[in-house]
Amino acid sequence: MVDTRQQIRHHVGELPGVHFNRLCRELDIATGQAQYHLYRLVREGEIVAEELGGKTHYYAPGFEPWERRTVAFLRRETTRGLIVRLHADGPAQPNELASELDLARSTISWHVSKLVAHDIVEKSDDRPVTISLADPERTAELLEAVSPSLPSRVVDRFVRTVDQLFD
Image 1 (tube, rainbow, N blue to C red):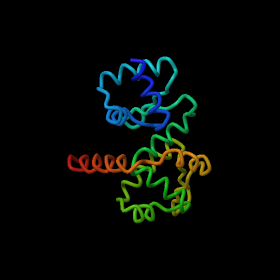
Image 2 (image 1 turned 180 degrees about the horizontal axis):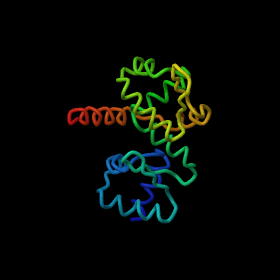
Image 3 (image 1 turned 135 degrees about the horizontal axis):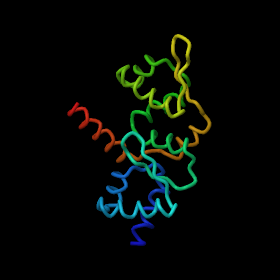
């Protein structure tokens, strides 16, 4: 049991914001076993759990709430692409983002509203609306800490494709 907890603790330290399913998959731990150990680790304050958008993400205790939310969004392909674009090229209008990221305008709007609600991006009040990062420096630091591996990106893309089949 201690070895499993050490594995989980190490994995969470290496991949801040890892979500439950990915943790189980990558450590090859059964769901019930992972739930048991994660519950104990969270209760003992060794890791922090935060639910965001239907997924529970896990972090080392040193992450502040804003950092946890930002890392969770960086673990998701579409919002990561949006944040990376804003970081690399600065503020943009929603139509520009939709075109550059090859996404529907409504998809951009939905993701931007989630990011605005969590203080990760800001939306200007003037017309035309401009989207920008709320805290570019801290976001840049987190981007460096959370760079997804190729297998992670492939799995994210597969999950998105399957989800689209059922919409």
